Each structure stands twice: as C-alpha cells, then as structure tokens.
Image (cartoon, rainbow, N blue to C red; front, top):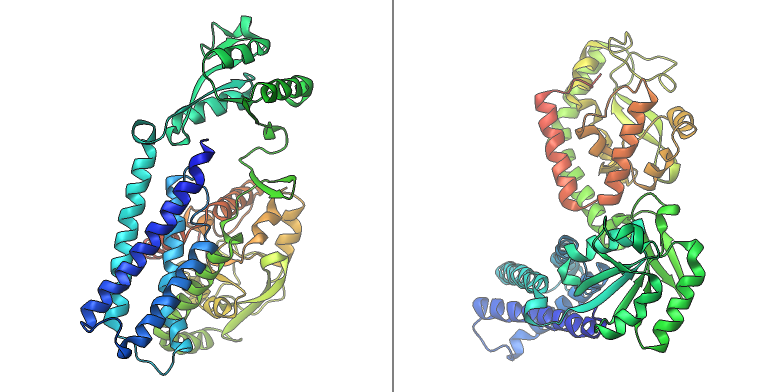
Length: 465
C-alpha cells in the first residue's frame, strides 16, 4: 500500500465533495433568486449554506466516507456515499426546527439536492474508475514479496493480483519447502534465507510475512533483517486458526483487536437510517392500511370465534429482552399457545385465521411494535421464549441473531425458511440466513426483502401455516 498517497487522495475527496456541495447550493440559489448572494435579503440562505455544510460533515463523519479512500472496496465506498447523502437529505426536517420562522424555497432545496447528488455520484464513480487503473496513470506499483507459502500467504497473493488498486505487484513467494513446491507453484521462487538478498537486488520495497505462528523466531529474524536494510515489513497473522470467516481489525492504543464478524448496524449512521425508515414505513402502513382494515378484521374475527381481536405473546427481542408481540388472533383461545408452535392442519386455527396466516395479514399489528421500537420492518423473526431457550442449547450461534432488532419479515423468510420448524436443521438454516443479514445489511437489502415479501404474499408461500 502506497501510504504516502493516502492523505493526499483523502483530501482530494474532501475538497472535491465540499466544492460540489457549495457549487450546487450556489447554482440552486441563483436559479430561485437571481439577486446577489450578498444582498441583505439573502441572510437566511447564507446561514442555510453553513448548516448544510455542517450536516454534510456530520453525515460523512458518521459513515467514515473519507477513510481508506485508496483501498476501500468500490461497493462499500458507494454505500458509504449513499448513507452520507441520505443523512444529508434529511436536513430539511431539522432545519424546520432550527429555523421555524423562515420559509425556505422548496425549489431551492429540491434543486440543490438533485444537483449535489448527481454530481457526487458522477465524481465518485470517476474517482473509483481512475483508482482502479492508477498503476497505469498516476501511481507507480510497489514490488513486494510474500514469505510463507501457507494458506494465508497464497490467499494474500491471489487477493493482491485480483485487486490492482492496492498498488502492489507480487514478485514471488519464499518458503523453506521451496524444493517440494517449485514444480507445483511457480510463484515460490526460493527459501526464506534467500528473501532479503532477492529484495535488495530486485528493487523490492516490502515484505509480507505469512509464516505460521510456530515459526515465530523466523518471522522475528526476518523483521530485524528488514529493519536493518530499510525494507518495509508487514505481518499477516493466520486468523483461520481462530475464526472461520473474515475478521475486522480495530486498534485500541497499541493493542490490535480482532472482531469475528462485520455488523453494519453497529455504525450509528446506519442505525439512524434504519430507524428513520422503520418509523416512516410503519406510519404509512398504519395510516393507509390499518386505519380501515383493522376495524373490518376486528368485526370478522369476533364473529368467527370468541376471544380478543389481538393476540399478544412474549417474544425474544434485541439483546434477548422479552417484549409483547402483537398479531391478529388466528387461533381459538387456548392454554398452550406459548409452548406449542402452529402446524399444518392445526385444529386451533380458526377459519378466518387460516386466511390471515396464509396471507400474512395476521402480522400487520406488528407495525405498532415497529413504531414503539420493539421491532423493525426487516430483521430476524422473533421467537417464543421457549423456542429461544430450547434452540440456544442446540445451535451454537443461535443467540447471535439477537444482536439485531427482530423484524416483521426477514432474509430467512423470503428465502423459504418460515413457518413451522420441525427439525433442528430447518432452524439452523434460518439462523444462518439471519446472521448473513446481520453481516450484510444495507438499506437497499431491506427494500429488496420488503419487495420479495410482498411478492410472496401475492404468489402464496407453501411454508405458511
């Protein structure tokens, strides 16, 4: 990694983004108010310019938009840019509280956001395109070698070759089993003791040490030799011995801290975006659908069988904290609802209940849970307390799903893992899908899941009971 370029291109991104923001604001102002920007009547707009710059600073900081601009994955960069823009676009609401007595032109706000969003996307895509081919145009590639033909060493070599934006070229791999490997792996070019001589004579600037932990003395010797000859040295620890997936690295002072999974919703900006979406979506459903459907279904449910219209049950929520989950009652009142899961042909299910469950209409009252913050529109389905207790002892990572706020629908449900779970393997697949969602959350993924849920409702789901 060419660290001397990191700060330069970070500030190129910062300056360009703020330039585009203020240019968009100024052009929008001139379109709606051709008067001079410095007229006394334009005081409010100058204040708005300042506030919008501060909001962009807040959004870009929360999403770490300017971190690792040279090596961050292109998709991750665009997602961070999108999240920062969504936070920025949410500012009219805040401005209405900050400046309640001023009437801002909606044309100004709308045009400014359109201009800025469009120019920002074009700029980011252009930067990522140029970054991909920077070896040709504006950054010289650094020659490096890898010490250790281990699984980690070979993975690193493949990764560097597949990601030219890193700015590295692997000249070869050194391993003490050179004699056995030179025919099967052409990248192995010598023994470890030959490494430094090769580096000095071939203009190589860095060494990646991927030796296993039991060869610590060799790694330490190589570090001392690299320092002596001013060769940059990087250690690649084998985390496969501890984790079976990618890990995240944090730095607490001098201490490296490894985390075994990525959780996008640990980022406060993502949490705010998801919560804002939940509130907006649930309000739309409650106002536009439940306002008239709930009284209608209440009458039908009461006519069909005795008992309350709503069924509420303690379910496992975020952090395994129990909460009362609401549903339209689809069963006759019974004493085993909290311990026995519904099954196909269950005699407890009423006539209208069968329709409600088949169409998932029985879940609609859970939008009140969403509004209260006990649930999310999308997330792992909340289980009965007994199921949580039973399966947490059978499935090792079962409780991981409780890092998230439970949802009305989820990645597991749209992939067919819904309804009755007769076998542990079925629940394991559901848990795996929930954990995948936890590690890969984006707002676009939530929208996709909602679309697929609606599609399954109209198409029908064979697992619904």
